[in-house]
Image (tube, rainbow, N blue to C red; front, top):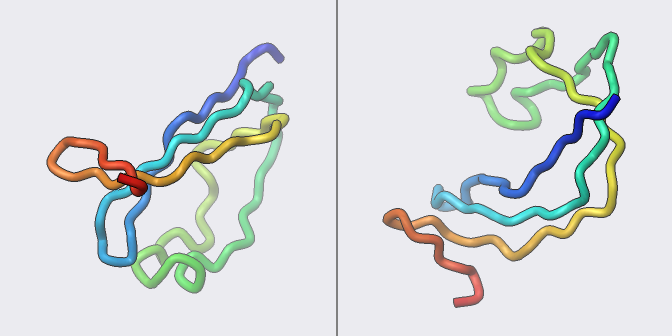
Length: 88
């Protein structure tokens, strides 16, 4: 298959609830067909009570990709529409 998967930015929240982003670089990954997928995760135990509704659900989309080494850069804070680097 010739399709590729790229991922350049990741997002999350700090323990204080601040929005954070980080840059992720890697070579494009080759994507392969996935006939079936099964999740065996207790979402509530791993991510918290508000994610319980995902227990027992089937995935909406599945991507099976050949990975590569990944570079993850220092996180930044997103405030008022600006990116503030953590080392500023």
